Image 1 (cartoon, rainbow, N blue to C red):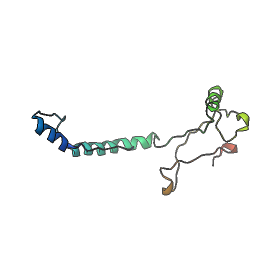
Image 2 (image 1 turned 90 degrees about the vertical axis):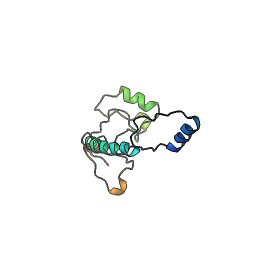
Image 3 (image 1 turned 30 degrees about the vertical axis):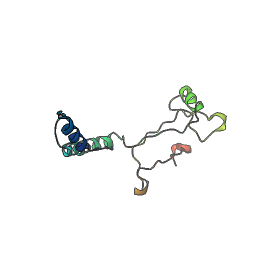
Image 4 (image 1 turned 90 degrees about the horizontal axis):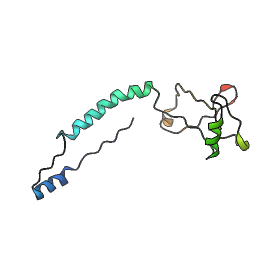
Length: 124
């Protein structure tokens, strides 16, 4: 989980308030560090859930534009569809990826990886 923290520029607000004499309400009035502390706390709660639910990675099939989506809709789930037009390097429907975990070298963490289905339920 990634969180973006932005710090407001209070100097321009103070200048505007001084020039116009108008009171500007900036919300709760809490310090920016309070928000940062809450974000850090929430990451401590969210991170274990992300790990447990295995939401820290995704699997996306490589499909031929237009034809791939049509083929996937007419395919039987769980049964690999035969490649159209001899294009065997693309997904044509019926693929299922149920990945419990994957261990990679630290250098590969955060990198996109390609998983290739082989015969006998093996992958490369």
